[in-house]
Length: 90
Image (cartoon, rainbow, N blue to C red):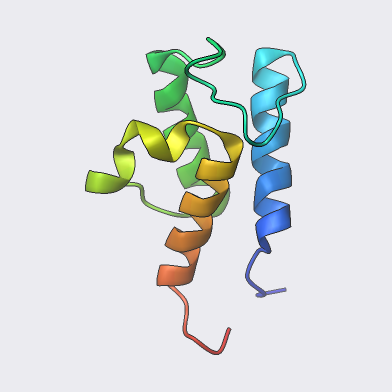
């Protein structure tokens, strides 16, 4: 299946990864930095995981903290990056 991944699938995959790593349920909108769930080291791990899991490159301005602040923010980032590489009729 060569269909694009729906936002819900992206969100589910990111939620599963984050929840498994922090050993807790993590709401989609929870600020991962303010809550202390994400350290700078784990933030880099998130970048690598998202790049590998979704076959995207996160470079330059996309590496800002706000894109990794919550599961929702990461879902939006991945969705945007995936959409940027696909045609409009996808």
